[in-house]
Length: 280
Image (cartoon, rainbow, N blue to C red; front, side, top):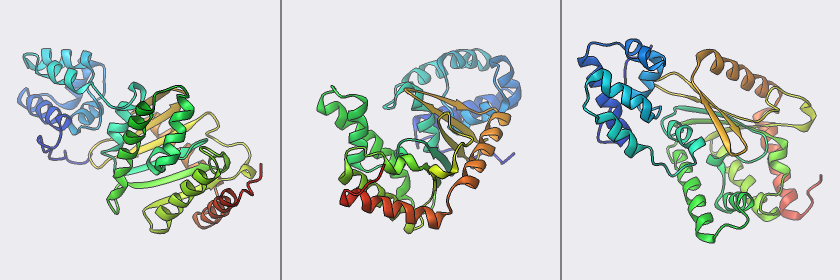
């Protein structure tokens, strides 16, 4: 297992909580596995809490306070950290995403959030909430675009996206918005910031027809898998489950077009949108 990452407690409240957990656990003479046992979680999960990769839940904080004689420290801070700008089903995944060194994602219907343009994101949220006030849509769009700031670093995290062909052809926001959105993906790929492949309709049935998949790897914690559903999501850290979804992703890559052929198809579909020649 990699050596523990030296946390900077001033970098975020999550880092503070993780650093304090590691300090108090070490002082108590407990291993990660020993602390995890009465919480019914793995030692790896405790390591993820300490690294700031996973979010501590209130019931876990109560038990940790009891075991480590922390006088309510973890409950108080856990409650404060529980507030998130993201939906409950995605909050922990978004926070983990911010710490990932590698993100691999299969998108069956929509351009992944990290790769969306402002007009595309706005159209997505308007479709989700057709009667919402304009400022609600503004706030949701801003939050989504803030996530994309991860790509402002020239190399980390590595982002590898497999897009179903349906992602390219569904006119979210109309043809002009789609053309701009696809050109944005092309720009990111051509400056070698992301890897993108397209799973064409001609691939037929495939291993991820049930929904979207995101895999995240970290320098100081085990990998995670996030399964995306309609208004729901599931973050998994079980090694066997994550390994199974890694295989699913490998099968998707095997059935996808090469990166070069994928960019050619994205470019072609973008031009079709731009000129109103999209074929269905």
